[in-house]
Length: 194
Image 1 (cartoon, rainbow, N blue to C red):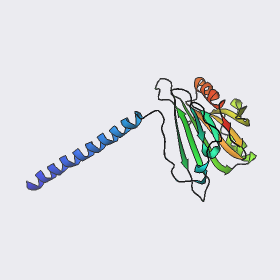
Image 2 (cartoon, rainbow, N blue to C red):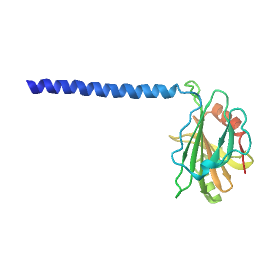
Image 3 (cartoon, rainbow, N blue to C red):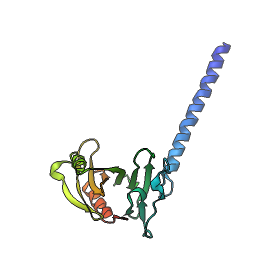
Image 4 (cartoon, one colour):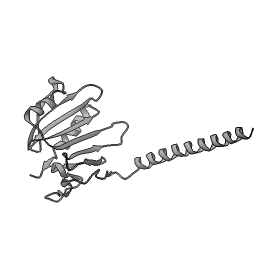
């Protein structure tokens, strides 16, 4: 009888701990979703590129993606964040996001730059995931590139440019015509430090 009561008490304590844990997770998620519009994710590891600073003053809503030496303007009402990962033995990779929180018209532009040499052949291979009848030439910040639709479970509009032998990709999800137009407007603001 005593063991049954002890198990019952331990079971109740365990349930309270589990429920408290779920409540904490839920509270943390709600807190991050109501965070200020500008989201910042700390650098995962210090990299040599973290010392790169813009060569000019940033304009209103303009951001500087240091490893890529890229300037991009964030539309009013959208959020910006970036993640940088680096290891002295490997190349630096930066991911940057421009997104809104709208459930009615969701939008995300996800850019990736990797400080790694990319050949023209590799650039052509990267284009292979695009629907070939959707591929078009484009220019982003005076650099030639291509854009096209990628179908499948990770469907998106994809823009690729090769800047000084480094690949920069811009993915737009969901892949709607409206979102493609927003991305074209954002990419028209892109410029680079050389």
